[in-house]
Length: 293
Image (cartoon, rainbow, N blue to C red):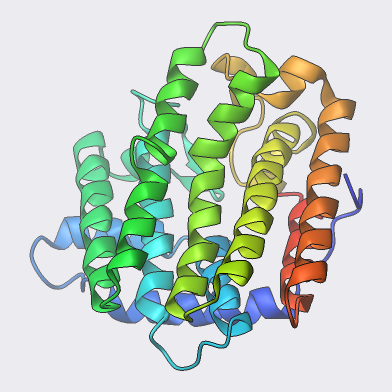
């Protein structure tokens, strides 16, 4: 990868992550309102931590493209809720059957499978209510396209279909681009759309998003081999256990690291050449390329 030593998260990412967390705390349903257990489960999983990468990317694109004010906050929160709902469902026994997420019991282990399923559904609902608050149909459509059967759900389906089969690199890339990359790309585009970015800027941000999105998932594949459970906050080796399609399984660990590094470098080059004030984008890309969890 571009940098083999993990770096401290950039100040921009930390600041925006805290901003998103504060906003989520305000808009999540209260635990003293019926159905209390469901609301408690929602807060348990949403407030369990995480980098808030997708909302931070939306906030960054919004600001870099000249957006001001709080119009972006409902959309940023919606992105985190969609990501969280996808993790809840991904962890279920019918999917990956994982026991840990962010160093804590997964939602179906903390409560039960039915509550986990309903919590994911509730987050999906709340996310689109938040997106509706933007008043921008194109932004709502962007999120829907990112997670639908041409986006995240397609990647999840292809991932399930691939279990136990020997895949080509193109097939694994399809899974990664759709299951992970589409929402990262969509987050950036939503931020740019809400800031009324011009077509050329939106195109550059889209290319950047596609490259860091694929790199992010390749690095996840690598960390499932090279990481440790304490650092990652989830079990290592689950990809192998579940016969998941990964880059290292197809082209080896060293080549996977090389490709992830190239993608990060290309993302940085694109954004440097075509965007004013690219520094926040560059810092986030480099952080993704060096992450250990």
